[in-house]
Amino acid sequence: MNTRQEKLLAFAFITPSIIAIGIFVYGFIGWSLRVSLSSWRGLLPDYTWAGLSNFIGLFQDRRFLIDIQNTLIFTIFFLAASLVIGLLLAILIDRIKWAGNLFRGVFLFPMAVSFIVTGVAWRWLMNPATGSRISGLNLLFDNLGLDFLINNWHTTAPPWGIAFVVIPAVWQMSGFTMALYLSGIQSIPAELRESAKMDGANEFQVFRYIILPLLNPVTLSAVIILGHISLKIFDLIVAMSGKDLRLDVPSIYMWTTTFDGNNFARGAAIGILMLLGVALLVVPYLIYTNRTEIDV
Amino acid sequence: MKARSLPRPGTLLVYALLIGFMLFYLLPIYLMFITGLKSFAEVNLRTMWNLPAGIQFDNFAAALERLLPNLINSLTLTIPAAIISSILGSLNGYVLSKWKFRGANLIFTLVLFGMFIPYQSVLIPLVQFMQRLGLYGGIPGLILVHVIYGIPITTLIFRNYYASVPGEVMAAARIDGADFLGIYRYIMIPLSLPGFVVVIIWQFTNIWNEFLFAVVLTNPANWPITVALNNLAGSQIVEWNVQMAGALLAAIPTLIVYVLLGRYFIRGLMAGALKG
Image (tube, rainbow over all chains, first blue to last red; front, side, top):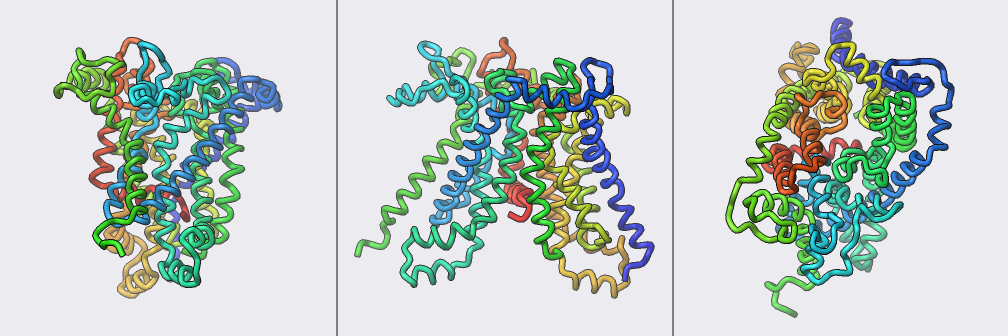
């Protein structure tokens, strides 16, 4: 039996957080939306109504269209590579008896490192210079006689340069999908695999028809988590190429147009569009988990 | 039948693949280490993969000279923010798991959404608001921002943690006369000490590594390490070897935490995956 006083106390416990989230998330989103509908282009706020003109302007803006293309290319390659490599590593680790924890630890450590650190290291690894200035992976390939692998990496001509930024992103995040899949695989009862084998299924069939379907929820989680990171990708690209327009994405456009160009209205519009993109991905998932959750 | 002691060819292939992947994951760290340990005289792009002739700390000293104030800024930012975050998360998690009121699940979902938003969609009001509060430019303001935007993940981790405490424990404590605060103080807090470790480590790592809020909300004197490192890397004057040493310096605190307390870090990671 909860007394009235206890209920009040419970509410008092979470009120500060609710107010903070109310202001800093929902209030600020509303405020951003208002800025995105204004004519604020300068250091001083100007809330003159501009309707949807900032949004319409963005969809006629070549830079923004390239940003969307870059984000799509990046997201598709990033998701595909992270899922495939993560699943492969999980299967491999699941099969070995020794050193499983060592491998898991090594594959996961990049998760503890900042995207900025990753970007700084990889911009030297993926240095495109040739001839006497050759370095990084290109130099390594040259030394190993693998010259056919030498390439321009992220400085490759658009639109494919952005696809190479996926390499450091996968380096950083595939350990995460590996960990998700590994816990998924290890939670499958051994009897299930054994009985399928007794029924004459070979290893591949066990994987294809028993394990893989049971991993669908894991894949869904991974797509949501990695997908929203990918749509927001910012620091990694900034650290690798500064504000290079060829690797531009909405988050960088928002940053430069707002804080370098003082075009607050356009910056806010980009922020709102980014939010819409992420919400399309995440909101159905949140509603779904909220509904299926049995009072935990 | 072959001798049992010999591993099967399939097993060897699995290990070979895993070792191959391990080399890929270790490559950047290896390069940062060997570059950092070379003397200035040895540094040359053409020989960047060669091992250092001896162990020198020229590069680390040069990087540290530039980045030490920022490393200190990062510590003064990260430690209080991580601790305050964990306290808030624990309070919220306790109420939202054990003292559910009408609409508690809806509130939880609304809070959780805050974890996914692109911060670009709140950035302009945030800067305006912090300027009006007089918190723009400094570390206290950045702490406040990290604590608030950390509420969703810390609440999620603690809520799941407390939800796993059986209802019988609550009921027994009630019979013994414990009230809302008593149960929190004498049952939940002691039971959730590992939860505090998970959350503090998670927030420490995230805030240490964060860039966007830091670059937008602090002035150069208060830059944390990520902003300073990015600035160093963008500079035409600073040599690549010093940049690499700086990157390693920026990574070392979170790597140490990972090596020592990796188990807890991974638990935070999995908690962030919601129902994973």
